[in-house]
Length: 316
Image (tube, rainbow, N blue to C red; front, side):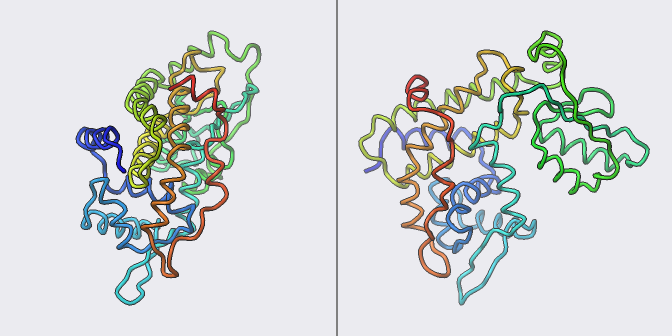
């Protein structure tokens, strides 16, 4: 039985938010399809997305576009089209979603990754591409030709350098802060190089939007599988949008009342509560060329591993 409050909340959410089909489909592929084998019959995928406001034409157009961009590969069997994640698509999802499910802000030891781009071997166009990719990864523009991050993922940085063809055209330095790791000069540097105020507002809006849903779900005796899937999808879609703008700075460099912590707890709570019925909905609806979806990969159960029940109850 569908929950009236959740249905009303979903109607209001879809009316107030403009959801780009490509972006929403990427969310569903990464969150729901990838852990279940990565392959799906297009007809069943279209049915899955209908409650989220995407019609058949939008889904077909977006899937075709993602195939051209090497996220997906298609296979025609009879009159049915099946789409699978490519190896490149899987790597992209793993890279993008690592920061969503696992809080990457480990205890900071004062280390920095510094990329020097103001060198004569780097053409201006290539420098602009690299700068854009590094900013997207969370690096801050410290000075002309200098970008840095206090705890960036080394593997991700190497991927960016390889993909932009700049691995042999820039200087990468590993450094370390001397003195207190939360000194006033460091705090001021952070505020100058990263727009934390805007990101904090994004997290507050996220929490205000999803906190009532968390309470409604916790008070429900049973969740409708379709509603659980839709809520989980909208949750991860919105959380992903904020996370990809968050530079993921260590806690020592953030304000004590950083709203991202509450947002992550709310997201974790809803995700855990909707996981089982949402997975049941995927099992009931989606098909592959070999029949039903395979069982979910074990890593699905490990998403959002860092919060305790007590943390969650105190948040919502």
